[in-house]
Image (cartoon, rainbow, N blue to C red):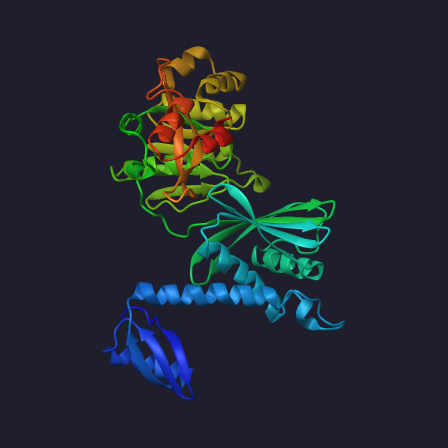
Length: 409
């Protein structure tokens, strides 16, 4: 066994019934005896079954932790301190529960009743529960300490990050904002490891997939993806970059923030406080012999001009814009000082993307898929515009008209 994974199924006196992946591994069993101080009755289970047992227990513990904190402690009781065991367990339990349920964001919102907790799953915010008011401050302080942000300043927004290791691992990005009722906090749960999935994992149609691969195979030029926050732009760009990395080229990124690890790429985190802006990082990166450059977002004229110049001088440049459609991207770049002639020379295409929930056989929604439009430099769409593409998803039974109207109007 490379990992001493086990789970105590039941205990009677000094005898522990224990689930292990190999009942004949005496070395592992002896370690468990030492750790527990019990005589063992080993049961054979797969590692997956054991991890499921551990996760189920963690979720139950999360519910127990929350239930045990519903009433305020007596005056002078130290359980309302951020460093008390109940508050620490509550913070861990929230993260464990969210990860188990496939949540991407945890919203902690002050309200008149105390603190409302909502989970974002498949793009939708769902009510989880409301905690009593006395828990709000110590719980927020606990998360802020983990993220290494100032706990004494509550009048200003804060951003930070930390790594969580429970039954599942996650990188957690914290953002706080002072509201009229108190500090609001959002925790974004991000993967720790690169999932190594390419473009074919995203479920695009055959024509779209072929065109994306043709663009990502180009030695130079500019390709943009547009759409609102949370529309899967980074996921699509990373999937394309994974296929590029396999060609053994120098891939570098400039991002704010770096959300996902990307094996084989040099990822640079923007830090505007110390002067490392998108433009400054991009200028330095161009002296690092890059082949492919990902700019997390083109926000200003300086970044736009450097990105275009890089695309003109033998680099493939990928980036995002916050516009509603692919057709508006050219106008946005004109506003940023890029001329029509230069764009005609470097622009490979512009994609726009939205995420729609997938309809399951029992009528529920589970998971999401992308609706995409790709507008080529010649003015033609690859597989119709984004509404055409989404209607195709409806006709294929992948989603329905209710979700189509919710996302695209």
